[in-house]
Amino acid sequence: MADSTISEQDFAAEATAFLEANAKPKQKEEAGWGKGSDKVALFAEKTREEEQAEVAEAKAWRQQFFDAGFGWITGPKAYGGRELSSSYERLWQSLEAKYDTPGGSTFGIGLGMVAPTILAHATDHAKDLYLRKLYRGDMVACQLFSEPVAGSDLAGLQTKAELDGDEWIVTGQKVWTSGAQYSDIGEIICRTDPSLPKHKGLTGFIVDMHAPGVEVRPLRQMTGGASFNEVFFNEVRVPDDHRLGDVNQGWTVALTTLMNERASIGGGGGGVSTMGASRLADLLKAMGKQDDAVLRQKLADIYINTQVARFTGLRAMEKIKAGQLPGPEMSIGKLALTNNMSRTSRFVEQVLGARILADTGEWGTYAWAEFILGVPGMRVAGGTDEVMKNIVGERVLGLPKEPQPEPRPAGA
Image (cartoon, rainbow, N blue to C red; front, side, top):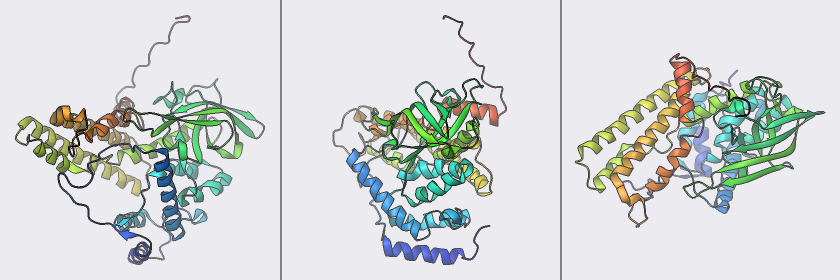
């Protein structure tokens, strides 16, 4: 039962007092063309030193507000939560947004995807071991699903886990793992019975990212940064009490994580909905193309589709607030997000032309190159656009399943 002993008004007063004592109010940034930062990159391009400093700062802040009672407002009291309704969580977020505090992107995957899966499927021992630490910021978690030959086809993964007494031995490779370089634990799905149909022989585990046999290698992106990694597991031992759900029932575990992942990605703006059409309108004016009828129509198209996506996302969020699990509508949200990013990318390319090819120092021009180069990555993250279309077609529209390719003849 939720703790209803504190009113939202008293809660807001408590949160405001804490924020005033521990953070500075945000200063209003200068708005308009040529003012402030012109950065619009989708992925952070930081050195490892900058990244480590940012993670340390984010951890320190999270530990501080968790200890004050704001780290897991809706969570069970047994793990440091307050068991309040989600309206209190939204109230805290709206108040914190008024203050200059470290960003929470470090914990996005761990708290948005991995922790809910641990709460739903882990043993009591694992819940006791990790949930409080994750929400307090003592630990960071990553998600280990995709593989070189099984990207969006999660059921085709080959990383194996073999039972050895009361431990599992994990061997294989994962790829496109965000945050693996600073994560303490990871949620991994492995094949535990190759004789079963591919959806049936999977099992989920919590793996120690510092364990012997775990190797994290950064992947350089075409934007210049290395936000993702490939991770190798060479006979890594995982205790059976770190298993998520029953043996060979990992598909259910994975779906829990994926639904939360698509809720997280599809519900975000990724730099498009948050920047608004005004930034693009300013770009059009600065380049002297505000009277171009075709470009004006494209700008209107971006605005309309962004608003439609926002309202669709709000409807889905209301469903979650009502206690229902996020479903296929989150695939619609994720697909709408990347479609709008692609629209924005094509619009900017047409407006700027050669200006995105070299940095001349002109404000608000070459900076868009990082956004344009990041869009293909977003079309893969959280399930490719093609997979999202299949989900929408089959589960939302009720269309027939996509035909499977014919098996390759022996020896071919």
